[in-house]
Length: 109
Image 1 (tube, rainbow, N blue to C red):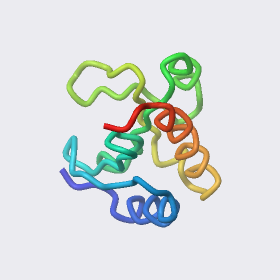
Image 2 (cartoon, rainbow, N blue to C red):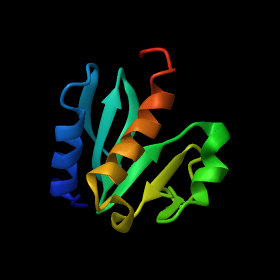
Image 3 (cartoon, rainbow, N blue to C red):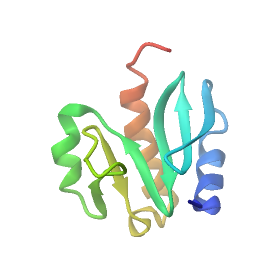
């Protein structure tokens, strides 16, 4: 499955100065890892975002957000953000920051 390379480049540009970020092909797309933990990724043209478990239900209620159900079962703590929710750099940055705030609390792998 192909993924939105323009979105991938926007993420790379935004995360360029953050230490510990690596890329890995996952879920038929690409994932951006922080210290070995998936933070965000791209599947087709949707952004996959890892969120705090206690914020999961709240985040699902946000516009342009849906459950991440890559395997046919939703993965709690992960959501998809549709393209319409990523049009501006501010929108993208808010999702990257939300994920980084949680993943940064995890011990490095």
